[in-house]
Length: 128
Image (cartoon, rainbow, N blue to C red):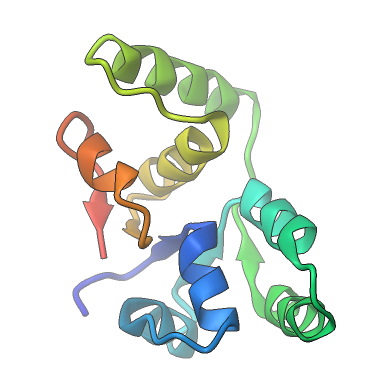
């Protein structure tokens, strides 16, 4: 893997919780390179519907580092969404937040969500 810091999207973490291999995520976790957007933590917790998911997510989020965001970050999220919409790309606020966290940290984004491949055509977003 060629990254020194990584941000993970909810879908990649859900895959791992459900036992599916995400090699870039495994590498980032093993090497303590992973930083999680705050909204991803909320999405993980709110999406856990089974007891085993709830337990696995609780264990996972205890070891994750969270990206600290400020006012400038949220303005950049809005600017990012507006800029992408000018290209016909409708990105949700949570996905724009995840992408902006990766940009803020100059990090590789670990995701299985195809929207980010489209987004990376318009912004400097490295996918892993």
